Image 1 (cartoon, rainbow, N blue to C red):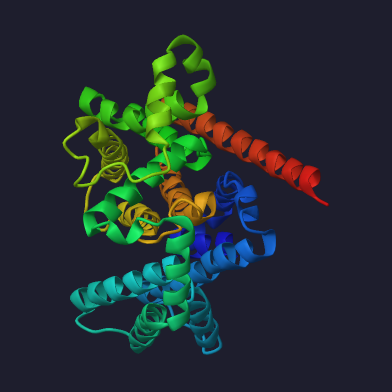
Image 2: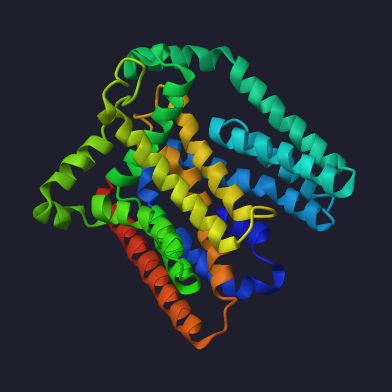
Length: 367
């Protein structure tokens, strides 16, 4: 389901045959073993099903934007998908923000709005209201504060934002996130192939070097540069790192600055690849995905939810990878074709190895 919706939204009809295969290998990079965090069934329904229905519920935006007719029997399917996904806080935020934002864009573009956009927006807003006012959610939150994060209610708004940033970056480094690694690598490949300016290349390299030195190659690097491991351990700590009480110690600012630099550099790389801010759907997808993970900093489950809550950010990065790949294959120069072939091989082999890894996980952990 996620693959179908991503293809339907982000790949043009005439280009799907050549790009759907690459999309498949990119999706295979996602570590599906994250779905066993609190039981395969529960985690899959709460996160994977929510992701699938969220993406499916976004298809009408693409159809209406392109002036494509929506069949009568599709309306209830899209609405039911939105209602299902609207029961999960992260996907509800994505749906609400996406429908409201594109409703505004359509009013600016066409001076009018499709009635179905209003209906879907109202359902998304209603879902947000339901989540915020549901007594059960409040009771659960209070229990989680007592069990998981006793100091949570003492944190300010900015504390929670910084917690969202540092916990996200720390989890990426700690888990050696493959999707983040491949997105940063793909950005490096594109920018080095199309830009000669050193500053642009430095910006692109920073996220890749960060995940490479502190994540992927950390066991090797630590043998030669042991204090890299100390810095890594400092970055991945599961605690609030910067508050009003400890901000006088400049060392506590480092994790926030490190996270901001990495995410900003990756965002700037995306802007360089697509060369403009207007109509840049890739940067919008990346920021929405990042925001869906940062908002977990406003929940006492910020550390206990671990890798599974990153699924929406990871799939947003997969979508951005797909969009970058589509830009990359537009080049027809001989050297560009070599780069395309190399990039294709890297993506395919990585996807296959991750699939084998997940298959082994299933086989070795089944009861």
